[in-house]
Length: 111
Image (cartoon, rainbow, N blue to C red; front, side):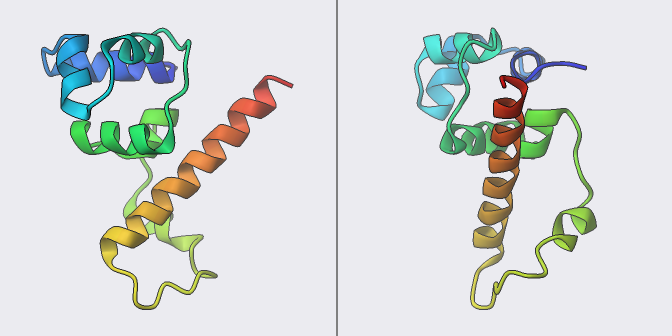
């Protein structure tokens, strides 16, 4: 299974982009892209979201290499009061939950 860094690199190469070009597109440094690709640094939630939007993949895919179906993503959110939130705001919440789960998993690996 590919690592986060390998997935980012593969997505970038599939778009025939250099690290510098990707960095400019998502407004971060070229060295940050390199460190992500070498798994030397973990991106913030904001950067994960930018990468997800740019490559048109889910944060779940970036972090795990798998993409959940839409119904699966909604089944665990039943306990949140989402009344009055836009679809975009609900998606932001979902992406944040995915990131928190991934981060906890990474921290548990290092214990």
